[in-house]
Length: 497
Image 1 (tube, one colour):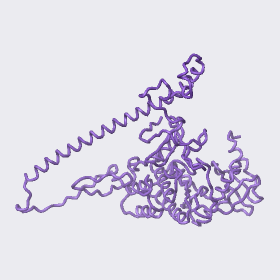
Image 2 (tube, rainbow, N blue to C red):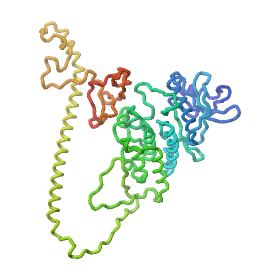
Image 3 (cartoon, rainbow, N blue to C red):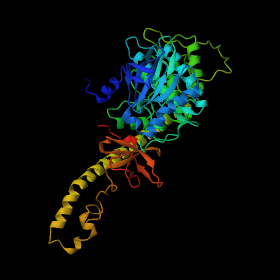
């Protein structure tokens, strides 16, 4: 008997018959919302049946999201989207979907298995996935949960996109509204705008495709975190690292594709799934051998600026010689047109002196900015320590005030029971107290993607607008906490514990 009650309940279904026609043969897998079984129809047809967990089925919202999968797949009609054959409700009231039975394994299982998956095979898989997404986006359907476990590789060499259950549909859907603070998707593959609860479109799925390729090629996620809240904040506020810096052996063409798909700025990401697929097809059709270094053009003036999301120049593969620059012979110039040896010397000296002066100025600015940042960090630490001391000592001072009957009347009054700058012991130079609710702070990056974080950054809660139009920290144990007056954290100040 399993120690997991949910698994035991799912296993108990084996051998039963649904609606008098579907015999449950075996358990394929169990997820957070549903269990998937292999089943046989009474006429002999084999299929997969996805049954919603009873504790989930009581939610009208989650039932509607579950049923939305059938509607989304039916609208697509794409051969690479798993086919849903029927939808019904079991005798105990749990909704279930009847789907085609697939033979094979998920992309995640294949990629992390003994043989792994090659770069070109991954490109072929992703090309098919993008073709499905291109059709879905044209119908106003955003999948919102693309990840290796939702991409299935059949034994015949095909690809199937699974789990459209949390798709956002422009029309024809159930218009599911999530609870305040709830997020739909898998955090390591979610785009920044999706995590922040902002407006999403097809570029959200493109980011997830890039994160999936990053995971398969590097064996790690875009960002790593020891706690879910840490990962949540990193995904919402930090750009993805350039793929070349994590996996130097990946070809430069693929690095360029993944880096653009993972662009933090929406305007720099691929605009459509079709555009990304065209780049992948171009990479598949290239005559260059995998891992070959890209041709490097030598500039005679200065090196170009490095783009965060742009392609990365490839280093030569181990054992491969660096491509030698082309040598071009230049005919000798006539004496009349040949530049004089000493004519450019004064300009060269001036240029060198000017370069040193600019470098000195930049270094001075850097140290000034760094010292100011250190001072701000120090003040922030003092503020945190002061707020913690206030929380501990405030109550004791209030108790001492109430128990001391010989206190002069000048110390009594509304302000005597509250420790802080307004008390008689606080001088002009004392540190100002934090906002009334010092348990939470507001994390902001360039005025976007706000989160409420607790001390030590152990938890993060998204900011939502309530029915009264007030922005609050949603999903906190204290209920909705108004963000007005909360102190701010900025990503540059975060120190992960």
